[in-house]
Length: 356
Image (tube, rainbow, N blue to C red):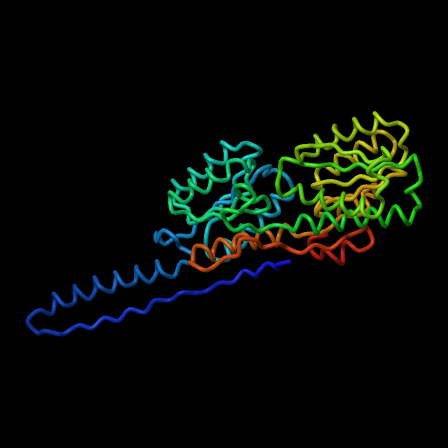
């Protein structure tokens, strides 16, 4: 797994030399020429000292365009991206396009009109990836994908910064297997598993693939015993709640649930559904990211584990990748941040300041 490179700042300086030949008969003219040349040289030096200035206007302007931009994950990611841009002396514009692909195109056009030097985006509609990249390329603006790749036919079109979904999904699946074994639940007919999927989002599919593969490898009976349930949702807490609640109420024979999924918002929705149904005391849920799980740990809910991968690292890393693109450097098409499993017992040590 690749690690995120730390944000670095390279100060570019320009020294201008001016040689003047003094002429006693044109002192005033020479002085005026020198003043004009010095002023021109100062302006050039000031412009060149602006880091990552793609369009040469002496300013650094970056846009962050995110789907579901009101969710905690993207707010934290955007905050980290903003800090990285401001550390380089620039301006960062955070844009929430919710789940509307047209809004993203409008936001990109707005960024172009405002002479942005680059764009970081998590697109709400991956089927528009080629259109997004073509629009940016035709206007000579660099773009980096965060979390959800800009891709066509499974091939990434621009550099991507995110998580290794398959590996993280496998870690969730292993935690579920360990929990089943520790509590002798594999033969308990009142125990059921609910896997919450997001099958239209390419970055989420490997997560649930990894979860199910590990579970079926360790407990193949769950493929046929009728106690492994799946439900698809849109990534929101509300939809996660309603979709999971329908499963819980539709299967009263299941008294103990083990819930896991593709993102943390959906799993939190399922936790609330378990509480409403009075099933939370004997059930557990596994999050995905720990940015909401940390609060569930504090309140003592049935969310008992979550792999932690840093939204801050993705925010910073996506901006650094964009800076490198603007500066003409070679950038890897895939950069994945690492993850560590958290529980109520260790999350403060694992997450550090992000546990607050």
